[in-house]
Image (cartoon, rainbow, N blue to C red; front, side):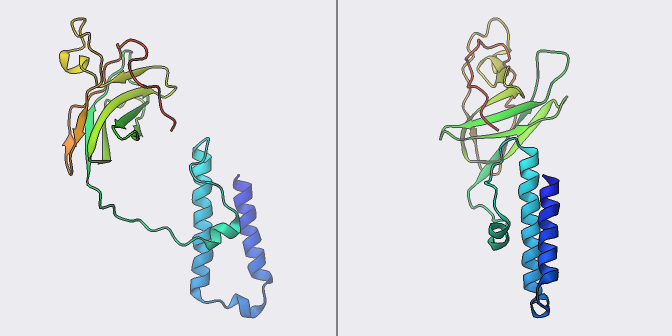
Length: 193
């Protein structure tokens, strides 16, 4: 894929070199557009390289050049955060996918690194969520269930997920997805990343 980007860059450079002299004295805005299109192409390529399935459709060089520069926009929707401790019934905590399922059918997630013992998920829209941690292969899951505040003992048979309310500009602490002992099928399967 890197060869394609280098080839695209070389093609653009050759076209610019072969253009009539009048066309090569373009205003700086045109050069800015070419540079912006190159950065957009590299961004799309980086996303394709890091994900097995790109989250944006691939575009041709013409389409990329025609796209306006992407600008960060501030959201007016209030957001909050969830935070908690992580665990795993093994010698160490593997990389995990922490998912916050919203009551609206949408979900947000973060990925943790090997050995991380806590998490914080920021910029969640205000609302109600249920939190589940998954091993990266989705083979094992631990939820923030009724068994967690009960103490995770054999005397805590309720493995239903707890509804957690996220409020604006607040970090909801101690949302610990540590119930790795729930019966199979107690939590939703791992969602696509």
